[in-house]
Image (cartoon, rainbow, N blue to C red; front, side, top):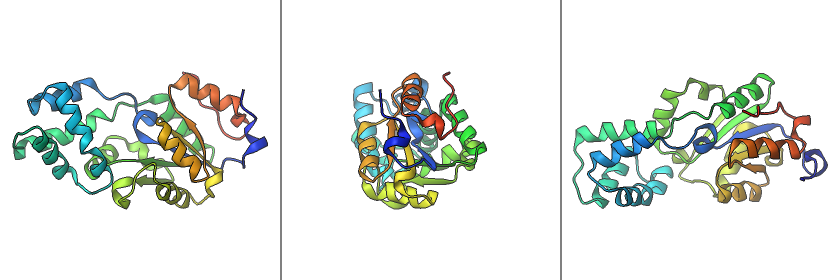
Amino acid sequence: MHEPEQATHPRVEAVLFDYGLVLTGPPDPEAWKKMRDLLGADEPAFHAAYWRNRHDYDRGALDGPRYWEAVARDLSRPLQEAELGVLLKADTALWTQPNQPMIDWAAALQAAGVRTGILSNLGDAMETGVLETFAWMAAFTHHTFSHRLGIAKPETAIYRHAAEGLGVPAPAVLFVDDRADNIQGALGAGMQAIQYRDHAQFVREFQERGLTRQLPAPSET
């Protein structure tokens, strides 16, 4: 069991959410297939090219078109202009499968007057697609998207930027992310943090830390 949150940490004044695999669920397999088939690649080759170039896309070193040109180049094929729009749309669909319990919890926090933010490693075209898909994104107090800053999680500076955007000290921010390295980055920046592995685990850890005394509780389903 964890120590009650109030015994070891400042009161939580804001909750900062990762986007992918926290506010959204696992990637859409149909979107993976659509991109892979369009580029004529087998699954291992496509995934290698997709992820090899992704960090540069997230940090803004590549914009959406140049990212997909790099992916196609790694697969040894030219990219047609008509294909680009299909890939950008499918890439958005890949990462817009809602994780409704966490979306609902964010809305409950907002209704209770708790500041909420999103901190995501996200490329420029992905930001556009995500904001067009989900109207509820506008309800968050602040968005920190990596491509705008030229930095990305788990770099310390991006957590500081997010805390400043929320208008609260880093120790008063609870950060939720699915990746252990990003959680460690948040802790190193002075934030409180819970790794989101699955929803039941998240609810259990939230309760064990005594956070129900400070914040609206996430639903168990």
